Length: 189
Ligand SMILES: Cc1ncc(C[n+]2csc(CCOP(=O)(O)OP(=O)(O)O)c2C)c(N)n1
Image 1 (cartoon, rainbow, N blue to C red):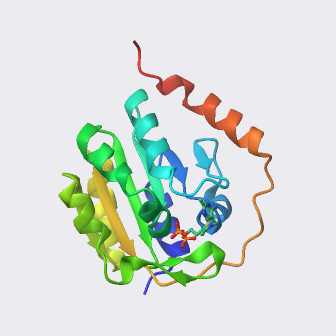
Image 2: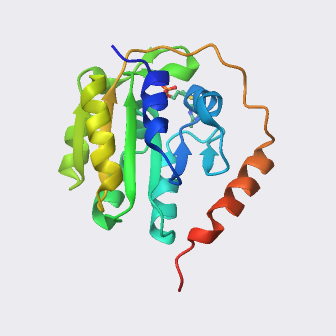
């Protein structure tokens, strides 16, 4: 079975100039060590808001926005799926890395062992697919990045935290570097 770090590494092989907002904790640390770039926004502390921030960015930018979301965080803010389904920006990809655990705090189990985030997303009108095999994952990432509609990919992975250091960047630096990097993509009003 894939691990979260594999799912993030595979996604980042396909990412060019897309904007990426990443769930807090180990997902962000793993992303930083796989490929740091100004267009990555690393969440710090605020669980459950990654997809909501990505939605706001998708609505205000002429650029594909990817939320690297976690099952625990998404369960904490399920309402965001209805808001995303309702607004349906044509440039948003929810990349939900589902390890059925609160991985960053010690792999306590979440409800996604039996509850399907893919089905919940579909019920909100979002085109969603669940995958667990690398070949399928690569195919759906390629499709989703080309597509001009809101899409969700739920990647089922096993719980595992890669042994990586904390992100050595100051939170304000992460924020301002990110804001600067997305300036060219602002929608003209
Ligand atoms: C409101 C809130 N509650 C709890 C925490 C502590 N916390 C930080 S990361 C995390 C687990 C996140 O799990 P998930 O979103 O599934 O991502 P994973 O680490 O498993 O990839 C928790 C409980 C927090 N930061 N904020």
